[in-house]
Image (cartoon, rainbow, N blue to C red):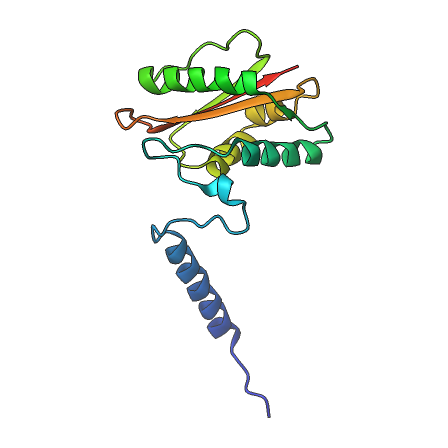
Length: 161
């Protein structure tokens, strides 16, 4: 004879498991990023930390593929401009103007790694549409950490045609 579990007990057990999972998620333990590339989850919240621009471009291009648009190419000139913009953004705390040569710019601050930054952009309809602009062909990225800033890390993505 197979033991029977009352539906009320099964529901209580399922609820307990859900609560335990939620508590574990809120434990404050650092995220390992699951199956993400190490460059996407590298912490950029320390002086001298450098973002992995290749990994950033890779995840943006994966997203663009899901939206049916061509991949972006890396652009060292846009990277340099993005670095300048990110440094200005970090030092002033004010969103800077889009530099000449860039057709679009995405800014973010406060995230400690690019996976979080990308997730914020992807989950914002306006930002997500910019990530998937069909006329964009080139991209440049930068992140600057400023310990004196209220947001810490400042992220910039520049797009060009």
